[in-house]
Length: 306
Length: 180
Image (tube, chains in turn brown, blue):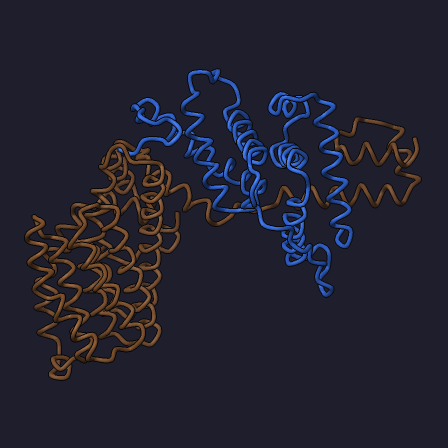
């Protein structure tokens, strides 16, 4: 056997039990190096890990096509057995409970924060109060039952907000959030498509989480509490209800199905980012955030990963 | 309820949904992993993986019970990938050929970092291998399929499958000569 024949056999990788090949390798250092290199290459290929996005992609697909039609019963049984369920399944399992809990907690949180705040907090920066009011405004628009109600709610505040934004200089990240809330208000006024509304609320939630993350890193617990409140409102009364509505739509075009898939994926990522922030937050802020997640205790990181 | 895009107007019935759920649970990682190594792009891998499972559930009546589901799904996945490449005339989602980095000089060949870097370099090199050869390499190396099974999957002969494997490994050895 010559080197060319040996190399072809080795490169094909379908090496028969051949004394001729073995004998050639015994006497040919170059072909032995080729054999060793191919073995190393094959080993490296077999050792490739699964990309980290595989699990998220799977979760999105499972959520989109509702691949557990008994999901509440199945998930409940799994949870009772102590099995880990990811944060998105947990959102689905407790969706209605979360909506009711968030709604009933709004009053409690408002009263608790008022009771805990000092005189300084009652004199919160005007810009922070403005953003809070704009969040409330968006929530009211989302809850309006008729186009006429939306028109009234919009008209009652839009001009005033625009004037305040023009007159009061805000910090850059606060400004971005305020502008997004203003444009979301316009969207809600004229639009009753759950997908479009869900996208607006997703964008707001994204900005809120960015600010929450920054506040957590700086140790600004007051700001984290405030942003948690806003996130709870947007999530309960805007994002979750719009996503639920969008999933019930029939006859969606391919483009809109992809849009919904994208929004569901973003929502899963929002939940995971919220969990990360939770882990970095001081204890007092954790309580507010835990309520939003519908959890009673800190989740383990790997329990919510995939 | 969302309808599968490849099956407009036909929502999943409970039996189909149960089958799809089982297959996704058992085989998603394998199919996604194959498509990721074929495409080099996570978004494209995700889109194709979804299509694979939806096509599979559409064709589930043609699947022979007791045969290898995983191999069947890998067949659908590989052909789906090759079909996209045959159809695409514009710029592909596959990234441009990445530079194959040389091994770290201060690491022993058996070290963990070396192995990690070797894996990454090999993945980049594989994207420079022609697609049919790339597919055969992955099906043989990662799925341990015989050339007969690969030929049956891709519609060629065993000899053709062997030839593709030879071409793939020859090209990879050239690209990876700093490492191997």
